[in-house]
Image (cartoon, rainbow over all chains, first blue to last red; front, side, top):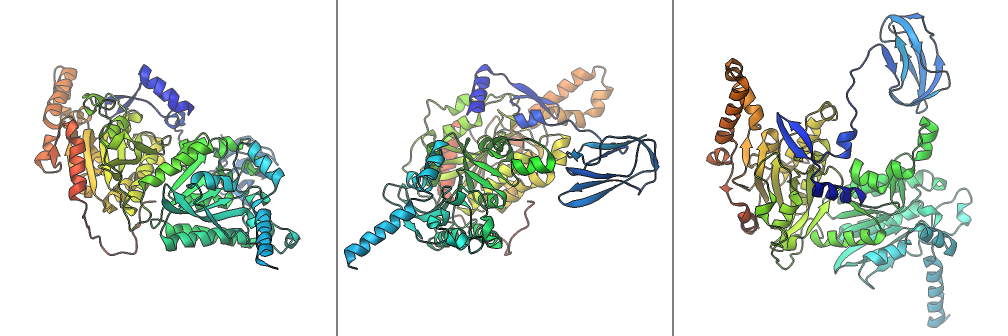
Length: 114
Length: 515
């Protein structure tokens, strides 16, 4: 097992990292999962993202268009269901980052408001 | 027809059935480093102990011209045999027959051997190597899976259930292994996923290989769905044999005792393993090996959540389950993954009458937004639940740090540990000295002429007064403060005097653990 060998090498070389918990610095190894974790980004209400991976089948708006909260923005089809994506706020569309027929991954930014 | 002819006819029929998918399919199986279903069973079981059943079962497909097809044994081999003399029920899916696909008769054979194992009260081992449901049989294939899952659940905690993934195991099929006690995987051979790379490609447009999506390493290291990882089928079979030697046949029995052996004291000297400074790391597995018989420790989920160690060892010949914080990785913290890992193992040991030995050295829970959002509350609670619920003898050794919630969670007296000892290096406190001094002496530090000096002094004062085992010992939360080298004796004695332990729990159908 390659990484166990790597770990044993690291132990020999004592290549510890430090981990701070309650003001105490511990010398230890970090796991791959811990090192790979994504930093947290707060939710931006002005950006509409795909809540599920799928396909954009209809787009009802364009840049500069004014919309009201509750207006249909586009349709995201996923798992054989058509999901109407509704505007959460009143505002003006700044950009539309998808085309009809485009496949999108989860969390992809679809629309941005001014 | 005379007896001779009838015997010849039987032999001919057996030859036909045992051929499985035929020489071409067998060669294909071997070309990718896989053994055949029967070879696998024979490699796991003691020589000449395998007795096969239902060799002549025929498949149940009637649509799409399936009735014209002959599928030997319907793609699964079932039977009974021994491992180092211990009886087991076993089945192996045969990928050479219709891709090991599961039809109604195939499922029926598995169901029958599972029911057999439950009646005989002996372990069941399932070797999975299957393309999934036999589509031609429609809803009957689904019914087959459902019947297997139901039996897995009924058998859970009654007989040991072992799953060996030696090929694909996809879609609904993965839920049988997931419901069993131990899952074995082999690098480049095992593949487990709910939706495969092709579906992911069509639906999401994302490219990923089978190995990266659900290979052995992924499940051993990232998802925690596998418990034992091997580089070859042979290594995997050795691991199974080793595991079987540690566990009892069923939940009414204790694991068979082995001859007592002392630890290898020269290699693992308990006095030399632990640095007194609580910030310095060491490998807690060395402590386990310095305590257990012959320094033999069978680690489970070695690659997953390596900040907590679980596994089986023997003390005075008796099987015990070790749960230990690992200061070498992430300082030994409890987090989402390590909590899941510990809790499930504790429940396994409790279900199968295996005493628990807990080695404590942790700074607490891992701080972080990702941990909070991943539900560290609900996952961390599993550890409390599992320890509180367990009625097997529970022995706790506090080696160094036992701070805050971590102290409570790691089988403290409050969760009904039967024996708690601490080493002189133990620090049992509400939190680490640095954190505690900052809060308690906040004003004195702030108002001091030299706050940094004052902070250091207050931390030192707190350390002397509270960072030790004697405060907890004064309240009786620790039964004994012992020298590290007394640890094995302490555990040996605790196991001796608790051999008749009987704890009565409130009558209930079942609890509602924070799954």
